[in-house]
Image (cartoon, one colour):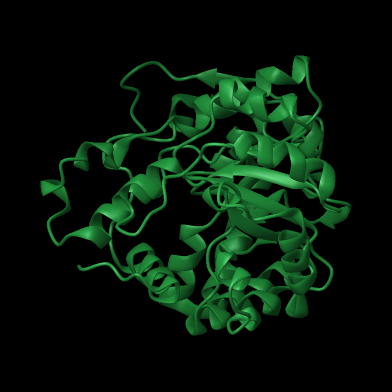
Length: 353
């Protein structure tokens, strides 16, 4: 399809492709399937004792779950974000907003972002800006105003060089981003969360962020939505004819990101968020056992809402909670802290799923 230069149309195209088309990684997986729970036949606890609650950004969370940054900035996003905000308020989950760069130029679509705080007053709300905008002289004062406008508790800065490279109207400008992040970590009144969008953060990149004061990292690894695939589809009706089509599956699997970045805890104190292909509460349990503090999910919720509305969202999260608690129970973990100490078994190659 011909891509649009209008940010609002682009955001709408992103949502349409994520809900109606297949934009998953084609051959690469999250790597979580390589692990299995170390079944505990004597857990010494009752199932009703299992409590997956945690805290994040000074808020109580019923589940260690962030509804990851998805959308905002066009009229249809208001309805989507309202539904997600109501879900987050009912379940006491954190919620991320889509990229807010359009608000730097106009407040016309402010309601599509602000609705989250209005409908979810007691959960963490995460504002969101692209790293390439930081390389284009966006200053702390501009971002502080956006944070205030939407009532956010933190600012996510998304690293997406692969997406920007493949986006028809992309801005693959990343020189100076690390210095800008370092300055914002000091200047902003709220914490910074640095995240990828689905191609992963390596230990080398994570350590460079930790060295400049970042204390929240969302590795957003490969295996779920391929934003390279999204942009290749936006750019052509025949995405495989693009000379860069091989990049559809580019990225570091989520499980590898978690293990690599979690190893940095021997030198740094930080919160590790795992997203990228977290398809179930079982995946979430594995991610936390591998070293994550919380997990994030995005496209599955968007698809569930698109096909079944808010009732389907409610069922999805209820099932997700049940799966997480079941995984905790059979692993002998009463709390999320216990789950972080659980040992996983490595499945042999070619193990039947």
